[in-house]
Length: 112
Length: 113
Image (tube, rainbow over all chains, first blue to last red):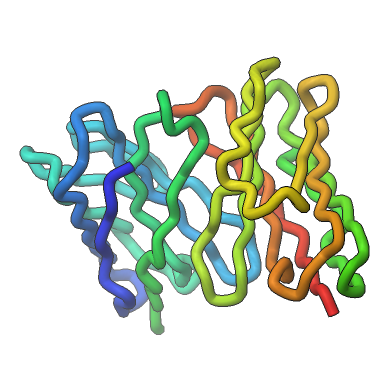
């Protein structure tokens, strides 16, 4: 799987949008971009995934650049409960069945 | 509906003892995964089961680690002759298909004294 690069930490004010970047410059054509988050002392939680089109669900939006070398996860109105470690993962299924490779992620701190 | 459950939630054992960790996946999910997370570290893939296919054991760190999945549902991760470096949170996840989201359990915190 392609390696991803994320900032170590970010801050965001409550109620504002949190924009978390991820670089995946070596992504292959069949690899999806997945985002998970892990709130302290809990198991990871799926947020969203996409291949090349932008995606939106009830939790977040995912913006993928046209060349697919980077993406941004957007939490439109961050709350204190969004404080967590956010992981950007590229994953193809197929020969890497199940092998989500979690890096160090971005520690997002939402403050009042 | 019920999510992924794991037991025990905490396990303290002495070095050299064997431990068994249990995972109950979401009903109907065909894929089951084990990961571990050492203190302050990211998640490390251990093993993956998909339906009746042979499991992918490529992430198991040593032959002291083994896992089985009975009847395509419940899974047990066994660590023999535990070592202090085995101390970690062991997480189980399940999904319906490999490209679908993985639902994680709360984990088992293993402490080897």
